[in-house]
Length: 382
Image 1 (cartoon, rainbow, N blue to C red):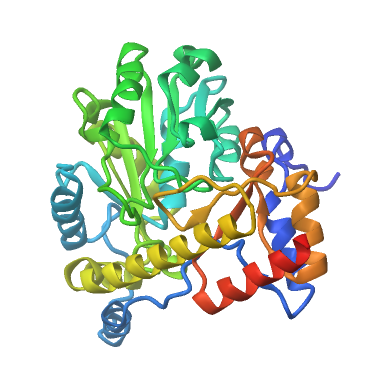
Image 2: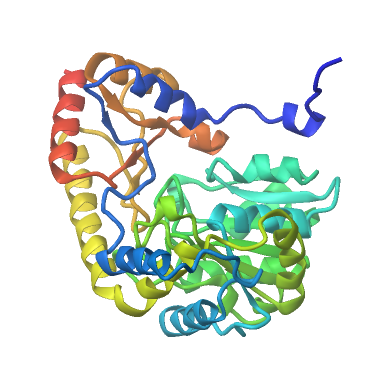
């Protein structure tokens, strides 16, 4: 008998996004609006710091939790930017990307058979991660009428009161939705009333365009039941360097580190040096990239309006989430658009049933490509 995959692995289908990447790779004239990856290079000073660390021979493991000076810098950064206070010795863990942090959280907090409420549409890794941890996913829909914000009403209607864990991501991938204090308060109240552990993925916190980011962990009674995930991939254009971090109560971080120290030992050392430089000296670069994303966002929203494509005004991340402008499903529209005009977008159904009837359109690509892509979409719709 050959190798047998576990039931948990067999239960998880291949990524729906990957299917469209593979289709796009089959031709050389494709404009991809499907990738959630900045088209900017990592800021020069961060790259220089990475090279310098290699030249100095700093290629050994760091502490399991990450370099202390980096954890200190993270603590100072989130305090200044988001009013979050964490002890760098006990309440911050540096990980190999935010994805590892989310995976650690699932494995640390989810027991077999536990229910994990996930606000949908949601990043494609959440549901598989819950399955790998032995949990059961409970989708909690968000609706366009609520600007895709998570509401107390949706939590109650979906049965989230019986869940053990709540997963949320704002600014959101794929909708670009954001939540301000007034929207977070009833969700926090629900979490306190029903004793939910909250995993709050805030990887897009720096990319908000019409108001400042608020973390649910800053609300009364929430710091003790919330872990906040963040990282360097999106704000600092460091996707390939794979560096993230998670913050929360000492007991939670100690538990997550117990898994991390066996599976990862430590996050990549070179990337940690780049991240430290980024936090201390690259704010201007982040501001410039954020301003560029905002210009692209406004262009895309205006262009969709010209084309008669309904699209709510997303205020964060770098995604638009328009409605499918034909009678087709999102999958059908995306496949036909790619075949006819070489424009790759991702059907919203990939992100859960709440995404059906929509498309995820990334504007983490240049303005010239956005102009050409929307011209092709216009031609496709004629």
